[in-house]
Length: 114
Image (cartoon, rainbow, N blue to C red; front, side, top):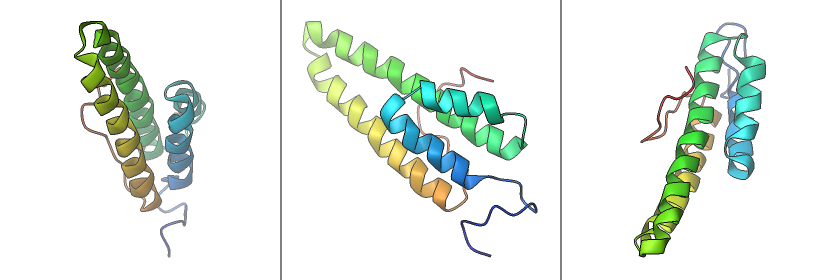
């Protein structure tokens, strides 16, 4: 059995989680939220992983907005790029983890959607 096998034994759909992380690179919140809303009742482990992706997108969108907003007082000129780079780095880590069939909750993610 390979890492890409979505066998009924586990029920975990790592491909769907992978797609959700990739979509989050472009839409941050909307794409992963739609995927989670459509698939949240299918499998508990997949639902949990998709919820983490949606919470990750929303959390980092809030962080990026706040960081760039503080550019008025110049601190955002440092914080904005740092938070933006962290978003992309953690999304790439999530992509790698989902390819390996693991559930990943990125650091500093607020559990907004329960």
